[in-house]
Length: 361
Image (cartoon, rainbow, N blue to C red; front, side, top):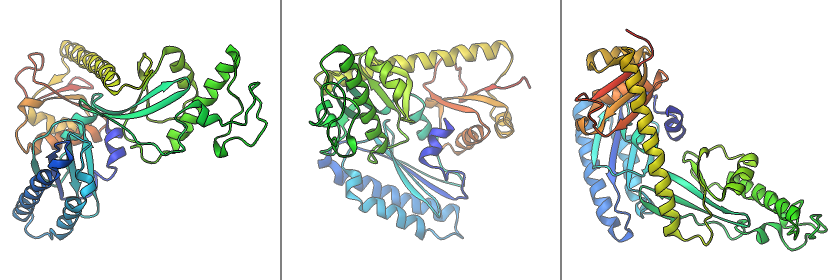
């Protein structure tokens, strides 16, 4: 989990102070003015809070960074449920999240990362690669919204575009191929030739996606294809962020966005349920072994010296601007533990945090 967060913000452990803003997005371009107005109000609040908390420090660098986000109109043209803005004296970053957030301002020595954890802990914001044996498209799914990723004209979206016209049906190139996308295989007619074509096509699709800079490398890529295509693609793929533990084993066929979204949401829901159930099973085992702690005072020390294997946080029991919990969360991650933000549940009890300890204390 820490790796996924730090892939996006590898300077989170830099020296503070940090200003963190969370801002909802309407997903509607016509409401962009309203979104920017809300953000402007957050900017004013952040300045007041910063000056009050750090009266001897200069706020100008923070203000300039936030102002540049405000003026970037392309940022506010939809494509996310929420934004999180993280700024310190040397860096500024905005991330699009697939969860709904209330507008909030956090000013502290460390960034407020609980929303980031909630966004990456379960499958909720990802790319979906819809792959047939002779065509592909890629989508970005955030929450319950789907948006097809616009690809360049020369993208190998079909087998014919990828292989070009100057390859023989025997699978031997007799020409120069299609630029840098030439193949050692052609559009064959026999079963073996078709299998070679599929493998060659998947190689080019994978190479293209690896090189396509418009994809956010921090987001996982889920594969939607038939089982026989999945096994071939997984064997040859070099995509670092390809999720090999979950597959949507149906054909994207005609690339109907509604059908694709429905299938993706079903798979996402099932995976999340399995993960939550496994966490509660683990909680039961740790309770039986006497390795559970919910005492917030003790947790501060235990988080720092690496005693926490997993920290379960009850979302509804978090206070607004809960800096104390956020600091414990960062300490757990830095010590190699995991953190999960869960809906309050009777199995979690009435506590804000439940730590599963690596050893009995």
